[in-house]
Length: 382
Image 1 (cartoon, helix red, strand yellow):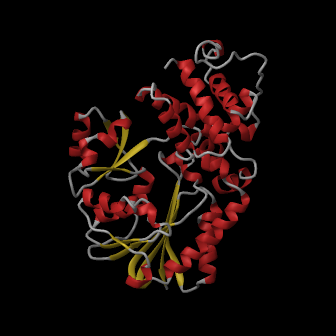
Image 2 (cartoon, helix red, strand yellow):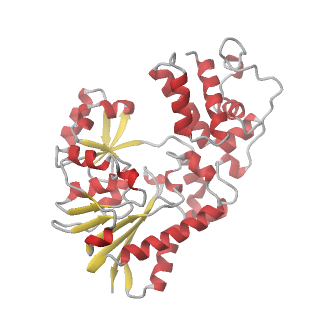
Image 3 (cartoon, one colour):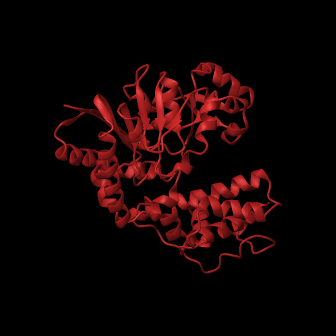
């Protein structure tokens, strides 16, 4: 595919997404219908689509319309690329750009920040607000967690290097590697197949490193999802480990992943049956604002009503998890949110209603620290 043909494909995919289709599904459907597209073409179209979603407001302003065509026009204008070289109207290229004028984005548009969320984010981030929002407009780094039960970090790097995957150490977590070349080769690599490495953001790894884990502890990952933090905890110490999720289907790959990593995890449909636990980790549903680079569609789908619903869910999970913590155990509350109301504010509300609990310590990370935004609060009974 030529660059103009890739642009046309991205426009078509974006139009489906803007009409309500999930981004991953829209890309999958396009790929299945476009057998002529090679792996390089699919990767290029994917990159165009996701960058347009990250910068949806600013590109729409520059491109003059909230459409697939408008977003791609805005993208090329933002990059200073000659539109006449792409929008040629010839072959599979988009139609010529004739009379389609954009404009300079407003302040929030330039930061690709929803207007209704801007005051909340400014209050939460303070002087870092512009820089954090600007960082969320860029593609997220790819990180790996080395499974030190399988190999040392340097050994994992050497394994990856032999397959052309370059990495470097990351300061946020001792077993974290940032992939600097050929990230798309990871899941086909021997290091990944053998369980030597797992895909996991460095901030997520830092959260697990901050947990007070010790040999033999009974631990519940209450909102396990795909089980990334479950496996990271298992790699830190020999634990009696349970994983639970309100949607069990999210954990369908966890048994196979655990087997590949060489650890044991029990799936708990009703975690109260095996309580009490020495530590309960609750990585609760949230705005996802700290990881908008990875899920830009989620940023634009978020509403004030959804935030109110999430607040109820977060409070409910905290209360449920607290009841399962043993007398001298730990309650760990985590989000991938940048918003104070989901982080310190949620903990303050919980402590006000539960004076027999106290916060021992907390951790806050933003994309300015080099990975996703994350929050962790560690609570114990008084």
